[in-house]
Length: 284
Image (cartoon, rainbow, N blue to C red):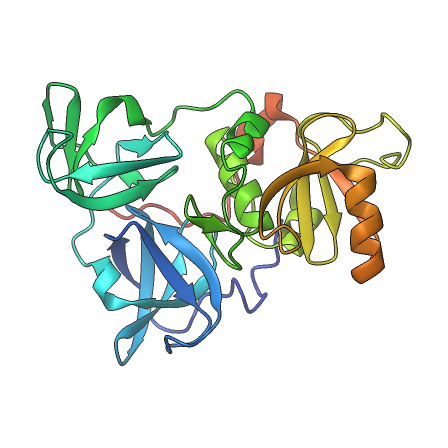
């Protein structure tokens, strides 16, 4: 499992106070400064623990994957409600009323979690607004194929640290795809490579890889759509792209390095893949 003493995951000192994300995606920055680099994102409804404030930013730790960063306080609420549902579409709108012509209050991405309070016609209500019911699923609903989920992000712009439908990076894509299938993975490529699934020792042999396998470089990762094609959010295409694995290896080797290995996650044992290092839910 990931090393919880890693500075990216280590719990900050002091007593944490629970907050809930109330914006479509809250940026976790590396420092309490708007010019700081993006570390990751917490999606609407996620619960994070706050430890100390610096100006308009709060140092937070995500209960989802233990990642630590700084979130602008405007995206947080001290009132925490237990989510019951999640956004199952790639992207959807929360409207001011149960009407597709109503003003849009918020844009929600796949994986955003919702506590529903009302239903009217084809719409359900949450704190963000009214969301079409066809874009919502129960919190424990699982997709059968993480690759099919990843493919819905094709051509989504590359964004370092991103994990929403507007822009995401290589491991954000993998996290989103596998979480939709019931498997929660660590945030960064080194953690995913060390922890996710089992090593594929003969992955370089032609035909050894299969749909859903993960291929890793130092600092990069992608998911196989079949034995020979890789889907990955990458800075060469500046988007989520699908290409022959051999082509990707040749190009990345020219500019950077060769792959370090590949891993396979057994979805039949997905319950065992959910790490016990996740934060325990608070009492509501």
